[in-house]
Image (cartoon, rainbow, N blue to C red; front, side):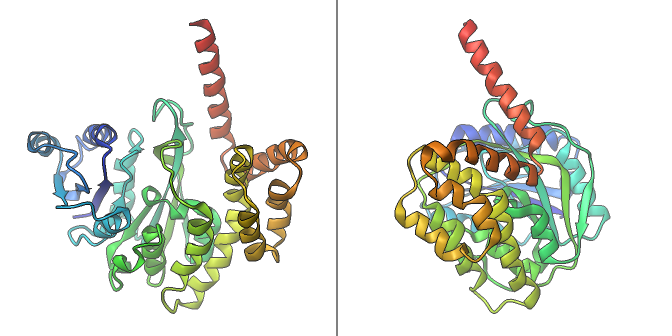
Length: 338
């Protein structure tokens, strides 16, 4: 079997059903021998009748745990499946865009690739209409550093990474339970053995915006990245990719997140110290993060907006941002008319 699409879920029945409905449409014409859609459920989201219905439409499997084993352990079990050559762990609120999964399967079947990055967008109302169409093309890389230089923080999103199971199976994914970054650990383990990396230029995944929370961003996206990189004695190429990843995050990930947190008055002195302690020796920190973290709020807003615009440009998200703003303005206009 070529690809296992594994969906970890907990108490999000409606989103899960919507996701499975989309996958049923997208996989309707695909040979069942090439894939399996497997749900790993920490709750009781689906009935047996519903499971039988999905099995009649696609190659479907349902794993219900006896208890809630937690998000990290559930994701680790997704990566531990041994049926398919490749694994995609798909968030229950991340939807595959029309026509994309067939092209992903074709890429995996026709070209040697060990790690494949799926470009993702966000949506608020409709998962497909809010995503701009881009060129159907793929970028190819041969080193972890070049790959992460292209993907940036996107490489840490579970729904964005397809990995060859043989590349990472030497180390147990459960090693990374407790970091909230099991997927990054698996990716780094795969990088130890990977020879070919690829990334789609077109959007493949569309995720529900602002649908997660309740975690400490600084602990996960700063401290725990360090923990995951240092879990094992990594090869020189993988060790070097850590600095590349942080540089890209300083330019393309932290600015928008910190700008939103500052707007919500969610930046404490302790959080400022975390970034300063970790990144004060980097130029990107002083250019892209310091004005947002440290400037008086009145000055921070216009400067921060400019930095976020630059960040999105570096992240190749300009078209998506324009469409997002247009959708927001259109929504406001419709609400006024109604």
